Length: 335
Image 1 (cartoon, rainbow, N blue to C red):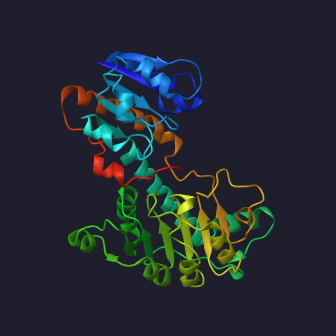
Image 2: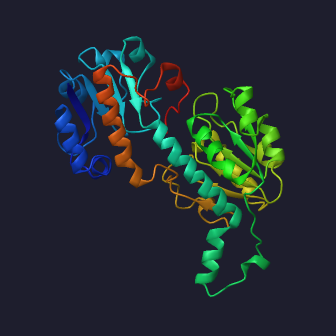
Image 3: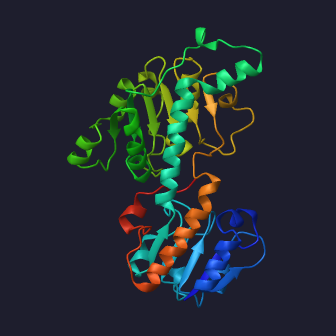
């Protein structure tokens, strides 16, 4: 089986996914074709190097793969080392009988872990405590009392792979979960995980912790703004690890300036976040540089799982990392 790695083999980001032992695994299993140089792959590269390949492994920033692009190749499988394939493949790719897999399942678990960390960080105000001790202080609890996660009511906006992993992790904290999604889970699932379906406004008005997990598309662009932030109770925690453009950022900033609630933000309307953005300096905001997940140590695991799934494809077996056409249509499009 011939496989094209559409990521510069010697680039640092590629090495974080494919260390030497995984490059050896690729070369032992497949007839490999590598993208030369150190620049991102282009559509011209795809036509040149994937022409006689059965599968292609893509990375972040790869150009859109359409049925027209595929028509000049023998590719039957697209394996993406990223999570969402919403901006990578067009629906017609599926119609052409091409299979698509990605690291989405493993990415989601790592992002969910990051969200739990953000919940605990925000509720316990860990950055403030660390800064206080470093500055010579000690008992910040008197002026800035901490809060916990145990037994709280958590609102989740969006129900996908990340949300499923997060709900499973939150069971240990015995939280009550309110969920809004246009693709709501079955009643049996809700009973098992103590999930109550609700509107967005109900979530913002009733939950002490609100976390955003919607895919970004035309329907969700700017769907959260002043109306929702005005509903948050004093002392609430708002978390966004989805996409910055789901939120009307200027309206969020104005709400945060009232200092009624805290926010942990991992994504922004523009990235990197502007140096003069108030989100960098507001005392009740914990700005993170889009690092919710996956952690770097997970990258070789993702690449290794992709290799294993390509081998399953070669043997005609089911692939646990496969992304269906319907699932791809619900994934984030754009940045």
